Amino acid sequence: MALFPFCKTPTGAIRVSRMQLLLYCVLLSLIIYFLHGRKLGGNVRSPHPYFHSMELAMARQTTDMEKSKAAAPQTPAQTPWGAPLVWGDNHNSVRRRTEFAEQEIRIGLLALVVGTYAQHVRRFISSAEIYFLPNQLVTYYILIDNPRTLDPPIKLAPGRQLKVLPVAEFPGWDKLVYRRMPLLADTLKNQIGREVEYIFCADIDQEFLAPVEEEILGELVATLHPELYGKPRKALPYENDENSSAYVKKDEGDYYYTSELYGGLVHDMYRMALGCSLLILKDQGNGIMASGREESYLNRYLITHRPTCVLSPEYNWWDSGLAVDVPEKRLVSLGRQCEAFDAEKREKHRC
Image 1 (cartoon, rainbow, N blue to C red):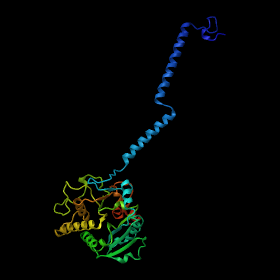
Image 2 (tube, one colour):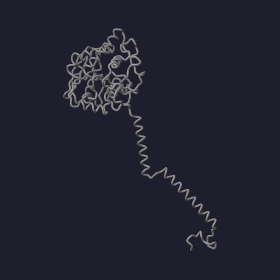
Image 3 (cartoon, rainbow, N blue to C red):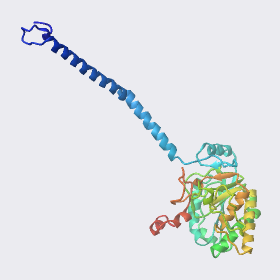
Image 4 (cartoon, rainbow, N blue to C red):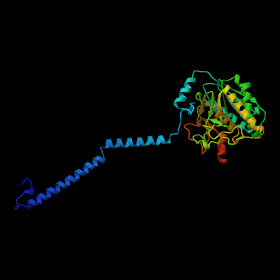
């Protein structure tokens, strides 16, 4: 038998002319070339499974990083004038905590409690016992118009104490707005200044939900308003009545600060309380009240006397469609939060 059947002589079982054999060879060459070309093209688009999976993983990682970067909140570490802008768990905050770690500092936390606001005292202090400067000596100053509402006494940790300072009743928000800053100035001058080094003032209808530690300490400390942080200057609700002592010109102002939490060294806080009191009393004499009430006068003062430490909205936040997202909610304003709740949510959150 011949080795190649197609090469048999015409007398064999298969008769193939030389021309047919040539055509078969050409056709076979074309098929091989076409299949080889497809294979090479496939290799370009589909590498070895190991490298292919690695490329997919790298692509996913790059996409995730881009998405993470786009979703991350803008958290600058300082203000335009160089004061620290405090986010609780960033590198600067950890460093500031370390600086104060071995120092024994006397710190006051002051709140004014009038009328029905007495219902918030125990929750406020209980949460502060857990989260507010737990490694320092803290005195709670509660200025209250009905001290009997604090019975029985609230149990405190070692190194913490509660001082009740009776004040006259304030029947109505109008009188409270006029009197709070003068009352603070008077209390700082006559009592608190001899007992603590730092003093922080907070609205009583708030709750601490995460650590608030030594990173907040500074000569004059203000807190950014959570609904107005990151907004353009024209959106900030500074007082626009030129007749008011709280008036802010259009070319003034950097941030809008909340009146829910502010503080600093006692001396600097006394100067601020006294300065705001003079602005308020001047307007009161002229029959004027700024649209933002006490907060307007606070912002006016902090434009002229820029704070040396600015707390991010982590330190005053509430559940609102306008509030900026924050990495951690450290102090939540239940009062402002409740304003946005319906009846069911008010009941759930004990408003």
